[in-house]
Length: 316
Image 1: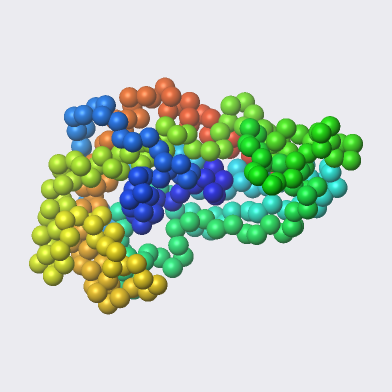
Image 2 (image 1 turned 120 degrees about the horizontal axis):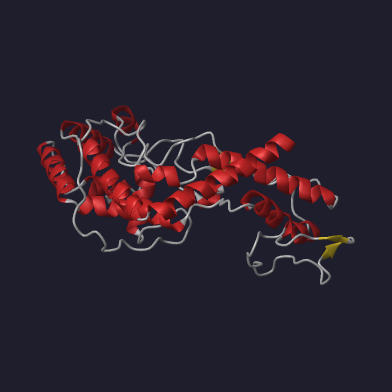
């Protein structure tokens, strides 16, 4: 997916999304958790984990990784630049910044880093959790906007420049969806996808929600809560601590830093992160296996797009 289509599931992003009816990788919310497979899945051995930086949840195989996304976006930018050049435009599209290659799991259950919690509380890393974009190097003129287009099957925003009635610019046919559409068409040729599947997005977010209702994780949360209370902080769950409105400030207070530090310590004492990871992974694995044929097709479609992107790089 393009940077605007992706989300790194740092816990702060997750909880912000869930608090507004669970947002997906795009701005549209995924489907609400279904009631299928009402019985809790079997959980194997629970690992002892202080953090999940080196862990991967099962659903990540079926989501476009930051590295794959970087390849796709690099190829997309090159294709749009080449297309615009045919029309006489020197155009360099905005390019997402993928210096932060966090996977879906790395910061899912934050805070888990004692040093960061002591320094930043619940404000997270100063580096942020979202991919940033470099500004486009070329301001768009109406002619450039008409040729660039808005992608395949994308509606034209109100007030945006549109192609001439004959679909040409200075006698040269404008591709469907403009140069943006041409780039997307080449990357998706043969069945590739450059956006995460809604099925994978739903599993990614909904099983996070389901995991918190699981009795095994509730028991870990209860132990965490008792630990926090003994340290002078009263929260029923880690989610409640993260979402405390008292943290809505430009900088963390001393109280916030102390709370976050206690949060990390209590998670470690009660292996909350290991339990959470194991429980959520069990829900994901069950949902994946329930529809494994579809999930396999999703992975295949991602691979096609990555190969198409690599072909663009080889030809460049």
